[in-house]
Length: 227
Image 1 (spheres, rainbow, N blue to C red):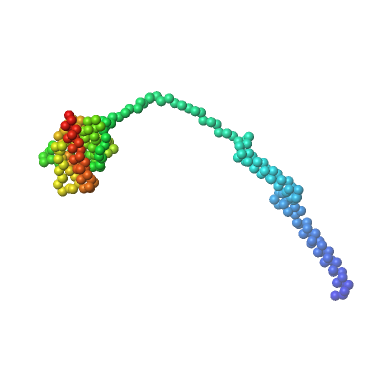
Image 2 (cartoon, rainbow, N blue to C red):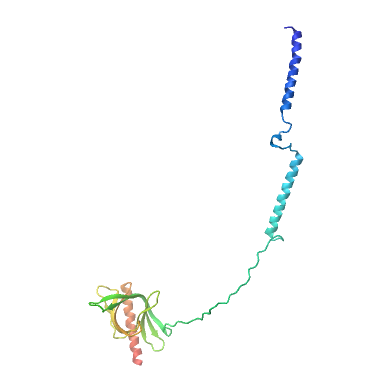
């Protein structure tokens, strides 16, 4: 091939290359955001939007601060009305008397009391109550009586004077209980002759009870002599 033919083909290739580049430029979208339905953003539009968002945030912060500081926009909770209701029934205070108001406690200890029931032969022991047994001395007469009330109900299960003729006998097979007879126990209202057994937590308490029982018998002996 001659040099002249080569020179003729070069312009043709240059022309084809320019045409291909022109087609590629035409195929490119003028707006890269056109596929999303938007326009080309500008720096001015971004700056305006940013300023508007900042202003809104500043306004919200100011409102919150006013509310926190108790500004004019803060709503105060309404005060509840002072309502007073008069009771339909007025209850008066009632003083409950135990007949122990004029007595002082000389001795108190926990125990369990039993009563011997002779209704059916040969008879059996029945529990009468558990609670505090107390020796109460009258402030004027000086007489001492034994009073025992049941736990919770406080119902009297023993109520009699500690007379000198009462004898405490050891219960068979136990060193922490005593058996004795009383001619006039009034725990049920009317005087009643009973055979009682009283049991303690240990032998020490049982011996202490017997000691205080004997002391009370001596006090009653003197008190009843005055009569």
